[in-house]
Length: 153
Figure 1 (cartoon, rainbow, N blue to C red):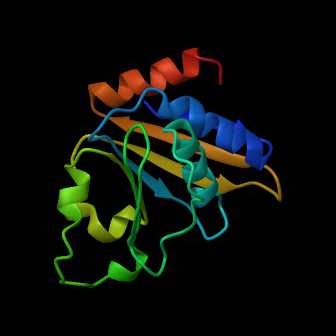
Figure 2 (spheres, one colour):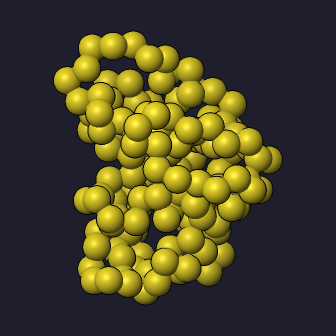
């Protein structure tokens, strides 16, 4: 059951993510797919805001993982550079840890990802508008998406 939501501004994308964050719990995993500039980091900023994180969120492109402390820790991963990598850098500790994990470019670590997760694909429509496809994998994430939509998307 994929749900499709359109946002018309960066602020609406952030507000959607803030709303979603209120239904997340430690150990949750979100995967973000989308072209460069689609809004993955903007979406992550909204999750961080909703988790009470005050630090500025930026793309972890060169560090692979950025950790943020809030009401629930946030682990923001950009695994694009891990394509074809055999190196074990301990991502499983984050994915099965005490925070919310957001993984950009998940196809490069598919074998490490938990079966149950919320897959989000962000598509660029035009300068301001984005389409978000929310695909919950597992009952918990079905409930998360259902509750978020009821909360006013």
